[in-house]
Figure 1 (cartoon, rainbow, N blue to C red):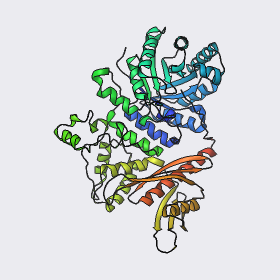
Figure 2: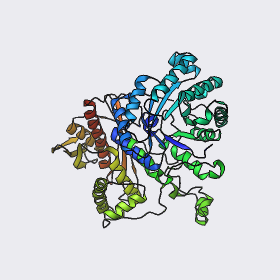
Figure 3: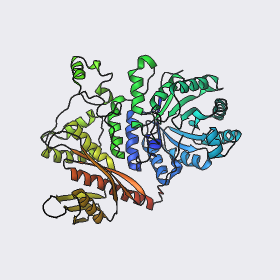
Figure 4: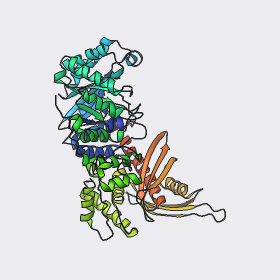
Length: 521
């Protein structure tokens, strides 16, 4: 049995379909590039049949990403499989991932099918998928709650039909490490044809055991782990890619297994995902949280000064963090900024570098020192929403407690069609006044559901990062913006949402329904 563990990343499918984590096509492509640079073996780029937009995103990723296998999910239905097959057709390396539920609960209440009917449909789905690619993965949805003997029969039929990867998902996050180790050991040794297939684990985190269960499955014979950056996914999420990759790396003495992950790209990819989706990481998140390599306790600090290994089992450099904080300033040039970006794990195109450099110079004029966190915030701000059509030309707010005067915001916006429009508006608070003025100028009627702002660096001239969630017409959107001014950061976050809605409207006009079908397995 090989000592290589394949990393199957489902950030753009299972992760993206979770509430609050949706991405548009451009954002998915940026994440796909980051995942490819990270070294994942397979990118599950989406569920192609869900909508024209999802189909287009999968197809674009298949066309643009050449170093990684690109996969689309499909139910064992002809329409799903044909859509997925067409979407992955441009890929240099492709995979089609088909699934059907096998547990008694799903057979009776969801599928209303007999055991034999499920197997018949699974075999038909695999057979059709093979017309598009010879790399077919088959999943038994809710495998953990499926009768063991029946699961064995289904898997044997799938392998005989031509599936080369067999995924055994813990769809509802129900299993335990001991149980899943035993199940994979049974399947990899007792199933006819098991030697010719790769067995895969897909674990959800409902009981907080997704990473532990995935590692336990590996001990039972799994050689592929399905996971997502930052552990995002349905309900409590999926197995976290960064955690399982670093566990296998750090405890190679125990597992004796390797992945192809370039761990020094982990921090960059994790932060990019948090920015794009508008979901900041918890400080105590393993591997990538702000406190993962921080030490405040006196006892810990004393030990760290004597020898870092007293309290750290990994180095910050292992995931792409710099142990030192290079300081840039207003006299720094493009070369220095590009070099620092590369040290932080970012590869910028000439256009991206120019855009970030302009913002960097503006920031450097306001700040005495520009730190790594500032540079990351500028780069990730560039990665959030893509091009306009709207930009902030100027913003001024007057606020105070004198008399009964409400705060007033004066906002001026530029549009890509050449227009420059402005307005002044009073409201019950300065942030509210700004956002209502932006609604008035752009013609949108967005409702602010939540708002938070935090400092990403220290000092009087610290960079602020604003996260907002707004709703319109029954849909929810996330936005993020950065600036040394908290209100301007909030305005940029709000405009990020408006621009995203307008870009989506253009795609809808071209036939993108934007109503994805949720798929769990």
